[in-house]
Image (tube, rainbow, N blue to C red; front, side):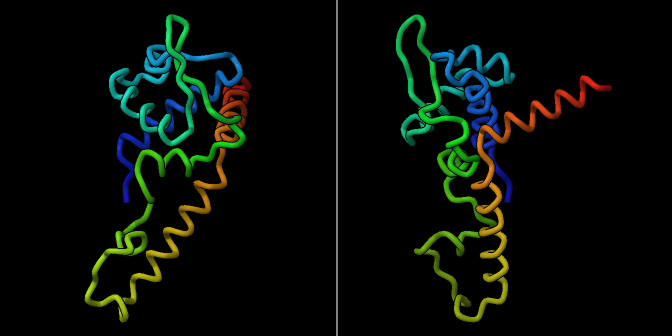
Length: 145
């Protein structure tokens, strides 16, 4: 299982918004520059994140995007699922319509379920605020060197 650029770039971009939480709308151009991402691609990602209720958009010259909730209330899991869909190592774990001839005797499905549950537990336990605090610690350690 590997996340696509949608999940990776989307998480980086929404993290950038979290850094500016409470300061008003931030332009896509600014986020693209600071995270070294394509502005056009970010537009697609932010459209999805807005539809999923994670972002608000503001039109106009001073417009841009803002988080719809506090950074402490948005999890990595919410962001990744909005952009990637369910995160799982194999389709049989998340797709009710998945057909498998060995479903009743499959010895690997319980393993896939455990992996999926572990991934969910981790990504649902990390908030944008946690990422900000982790970055602050990292920067403090860098300053000490």
